[in-house]
Length: 443
Image (cartoon, rainbow, N blue to C red; front, side, top):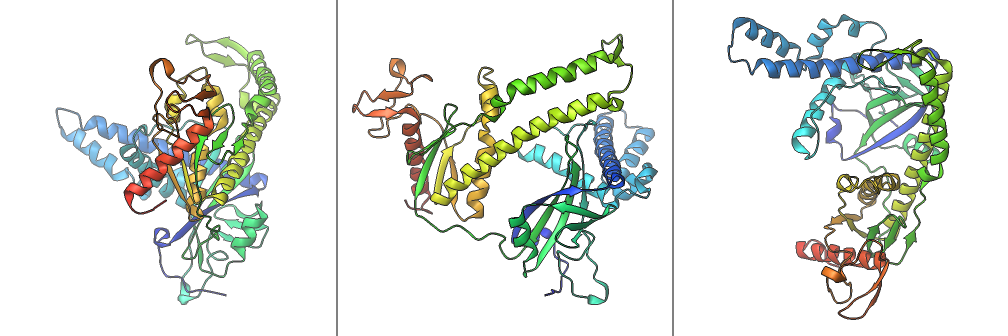
């Protein structure tokens, strides 16, 4: 079934989602990915350097003609893909994606917009070379003779079949992904468009592509409504304790593999030390042979990257399962608005807090709730632990509840409390109170 595509922007569509697929490219295609990633890094860093020079020149007290001419020249190549390619001819060579430059300019603008609009964001800085490669490319559709086309199977980025994908410059690439996601997307009869793609290689050497999809019909069927509300207390002793008295243990994936990780990292460090010829005046090591050409070193680096990837994937799978369970059972979900960046300043708990993944879990919970038509809200964390959920008494002074007190009795009403369960009930009460004040929802 085909549809007549109008020139519609991706932002004009009602529903959006991403699709990440594992790629299996040839050696030549891997080399093309690395080349385009290097060019993307060059373009971004060139824009950073040009922006800094423009900023410095505008501060000159003597506004002479050479300064004016230099400013005019810099501003012509600043955020202009055509002029930028003229200053670096290798960006027009065969094998270099023409859309990559425009996408890097867009990334640069978005970085500055994020710095201005989001508190705590840092100024855009230079991208250094690493073992991770990625670049963005755009999808283009053909409208010759007004032919009808179908979004997933036409265009410069398109599915060839259920196992192969066509990508700009790379051509035909075999892929694998979630069978459930692929089945639901490739069998769609509604108008669905591929907007852009991010192609990359992770530190383990695995290749991926992330597709941005858009449509006017939903990608997911929302979960049934339950009419229930829940408060969630996140902690370290157990990952989660909600107001329904459901507890989820903290899996501590990094801690389980910590000894093995330390052992493998020690091996890598010794390999690098054995390759040192001598130290320079700045105490920087000068190697007998570049580490990128040391096969044993690179093999060990991949082994360590695999361990980190394993920990990351285990944690992400656990967080998605926990979030899906809460969203499936409740319509209104409340959690503390934790300032994880501030909590990480406690060096005794920083490692455990990083391992548990609170910030990522709250993001996943918000996304799952929005996707399924549920409501997720963060509430202020003040006094959620110190307040009695029965009478509202707030413990203070000598009666203040310390971090080691897991159980306590309210001095006002004599109610016995389990610390985390009481906190989750207070979070639920705060969330309901905020919703009732808005008048939009009534609980």
